[in-house]
Image (cartoon, rainbow, N blue to C red; front, side):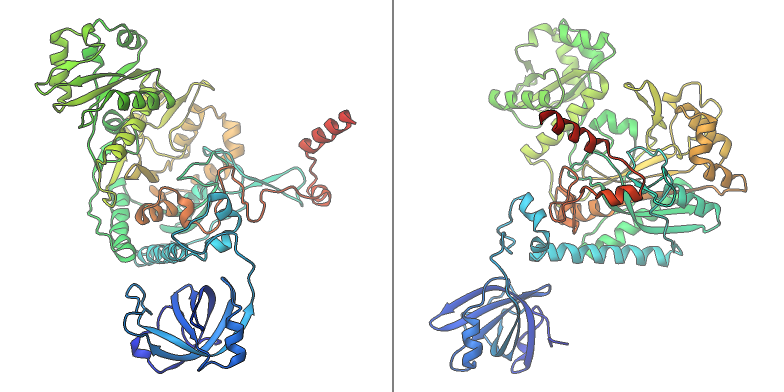
Length: 597
C-alpha cells in the first residue's frame, strides 16, 4: 500500500508514529515560512506541516508550489498540535504530520467549483463537473450512507429467507404506465427491446416458478417528466412473496424500516404505521400522499354553502363540483391573503374565497353578506375554526379542488412552520381504486398497474362499474412523499384477461403483449404480492433533502440530460446502418438546410 493510514483516523494515540498519507490538497497556508497543508481523502482531513528546519529543501520547495486539488503522497511523523491550535471538530484535530518527504502524483488546474460544503455551486456546474462535486465531504457521506442503507436492506431480506435474483434489463415492451426506453436489436432488424420500468412481470413469473420469496436492488427506467423526487432511472427495493396477504407484506416492510433506519440513520421509527383509505386521504388532505406531521385538515362544505346566496359556490356545485375549506391556525393580513390567492391560481384554481374568523367566532369578509347567520353558524360548527384565523375556500371540480388545496396546505405548513423537520411520519394508504378514467382518451386505465388484484367483493361485477372497483393495492408515504407502491397480484389468467379488456386490450393484444405471463399462469400460480420502494427517496428524506439528485452519484438534469458525459447524444451513420435505422429528425434538418441554400 502506498499509504499507511487514511486522512481521517490518526489521533493522539498515534503520536511519534511514522506514517504515509495520500490524498488531495484541500488548502495550503504559508505562516511565516512554515507551510500548512490540509490533506483530504474520503475519510477526512489531516494537517501536514512543511517546516524548513525539518523538511528537506527539495520537498519544502515543492510544497510551496502546491495548489488545491493536487494529488500527493506525504511521509512523516505524527506529532501533537500546539495548545490553542487544535480543532475539536475533526477526529484528527489534535495531531499533525511533520513532513519528511513529498511525492506529487498529479497536478490540478484551478477547479471550476469549490470542494467545500459551505460553497455549493449552481446545479449546472455541479452536474457538469460531477466528479468534483462528489469530492465534497457531504457528497462522500451521501454515497457512503447509500451503501450502508443498501447493505442493511440486503441483510434484512437475507435473514428473512429471501433469494436475491437478477431480472433482465433488456425486456419485452409492455404498457405499464410510463413510456418505455427502447433499444433497437441489431441481430433482429426492426425489433426492439425495452428497458424495464420495473421487474413486475418477471418477479410474478418467479413466484410461478416456485421461488417463494424474491428480492432485488433493481434498476428501473421510465421515460416520464422529471421532478424533485423522480429521475429517468432509479433504484428500488423490489420484492415479491407467495402465500401472503396485504397485512403480511406491510408488516415485513415496517420491520425493515424500523431496523434499517435505526442502524443507518440512528432514527427511531415506531411501528405499526397508521393506515387510512385512499378516500379518507383525499377527503382530509386532498392528496394520496399526505404529510401527516400536521393536521390542517380539509373540510368539504358543499352541503352548507349551497344554502347561501353566493353564486360562485352554487354554480360550481350545480356542475358537480365541490367547495372545500382549510383553516390555517393564524390570522393573515390582506397582503398575505392576496399572495395565497395568486398561489392558488398558479396551481390551477380560478380563485380563492376567504372569511376572517373573529375572536368571538364570527365570520367576516367581502363575501359574508351572501351568507345568512344560520349558514355562517353552520360553517363555524362544521369547520371548528380557531379564533383570530382565516378560512380559505376553493371551489372547483373535485380533482382540481383537491390538487390546489394539497399545494396550499403544504405551503401554509411551510410558511407557518407547522411541523418538526426531522419528524418521520410513515403512513399506509390503502384501498385505491383499481381503475381511473382518462378523460382525454375516454377510456379506463389502471390506477397503479393492471396486475393488481381487485378486492374480492368486486370481482363478480367487475365490468358493471369499473370506477367503483377497489383494488387490493396500497402506497407507503412519508412526510408527503410516495415511498413505494404494492399490491396483491392477479394470479388467475381469466381474471387478468377481464381486467385487460376493461382497459381496452383485446384478447389478441393481451396475448401479444402479455402472453408469456398468461401462459405461465396456466400451469398453476400461487397467491402472491409485493412492493417496489424507492431507495433514493428514503435516503433523501432521512438526510433532509428535497431533491433525490443529492443522493444519486450521476443523476440527470431536469431535461433528462447528463451535462458531464453529454448524454443523450447522436450516434453515427455506421451505427444507424448496423441497427437498420433511419432518423427522420436528421432528414428534416437536412431538408431545412437545403431550403435555406
